[in-house]
Image (cartoon, helix red, strand yellow):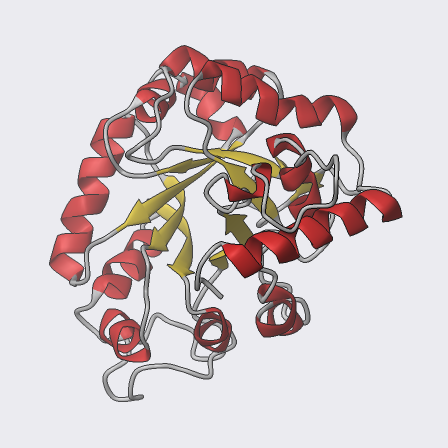
Length: 288
């Protein structure tokens, strides 16, 4: 199983198990520095002041050794520019590697973002100025996201920002993928693999449900721990990076203990993971 992924010639190879923060998780700056010392160098920041943003602001020249992804929520060009400038100030950095347009859930929303004067206009200019390296998109709509990435959904030719490549407007996709929600295997990867578009995946634990029992579990079955569900995601070569969002040092150390045993699941282990994923999907609600 390949240990690293390289997003572009301008970015260092990254460990395929990345670290993320969310508004409902807590990591201290020392936790983030610990992860980086362990070899983790793909960081995904939620945009709020937290331990990750503080850790990055303290890095100095070591900032060049990480790939830093940031979730942007603005929809207009002016607002996106202000949000970017605020993020650069918060992080005390000269550039951001990846800005992901956060939760784009409809074609009309994407077209507004891609129209001249939309958020993409600010991101295109930021790339030209060296403030940004890549533009990404986060969505729960897998087929739509894949179509956007392949250039099949774009704003009207007369309205689309001219800086966007109509055949490949995005540099990265960020999507949900786990053993219970494997739709990306049919809806996304067959599109992104041929065009070599990196896919970063999240919700690898299905909000913790994959570590819990279901009514249909075999007798004596114990659900595998978090580490094994990240292993499942990373066993798929179509996944560039799988991100973990641990809440505190104990979860952080457990998740990244995977680095001490970096291998794909055996055939028997994979069957166990997929079967439990199927049971969690059956009992866990309506998310596709």
